[in-house]
Image 1 (spheres, one colour):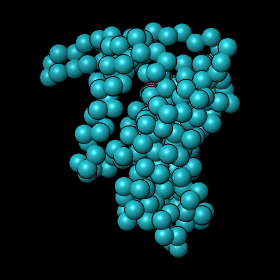
Image 2 (image 1 turned 135 degrees about the vertical axis):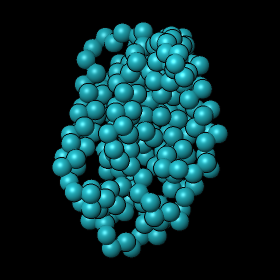
Image 3 (image 1 turned 90 degrees about the horizontal axis):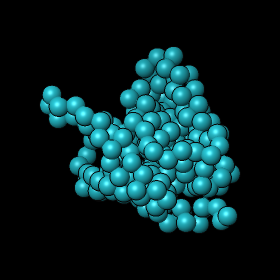
Image 4 (image 1 turned 90 degrees about the vertical axis):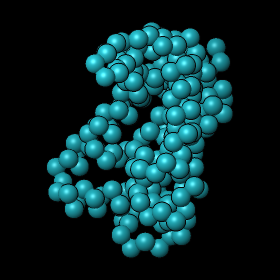
Length: 215
């Protein structure tokens, strides 16, 4: 299932959401010109590597290991990794920014990314595989959206074999199902940091009421 758009209009231009999307795309385009060894070296230098953060001392880092908790949020491993994350950020981020305000949304996004990365580190302390991607922070944005707009319709591209449909799904069901999938996928292995998704979502649930503006 791929979300295409929602039914909640925004009242002003989502400047922070657009800036985050632009920053992620720009960094990816810069890295796209790297050779494969250079690309991999950059990922190791600026990704969040659990083992290096828990036990600092790596010689391949050009920044302190803990700084990777922030820089990793702006790196992506490939085009589809980037495209999927930016699609979710656009659909759900603009509305969350609208109800939080620009500065609050920026702080909320970064804090969700921080807690998502820490959740991944806590569950993979010995791993020397770098964590990259904005999905942990975006998971928090999904949680905030679900709390604020549970009845919003998410028009979703759904396919099964040769059946293709665009189906409107209430946000609470779309995002709730997405979260359940992340929980059950923990421990299944593979390149996806499921624990970071869960950690970011839980952080979003806790922080969203605090960061929502009072009118």
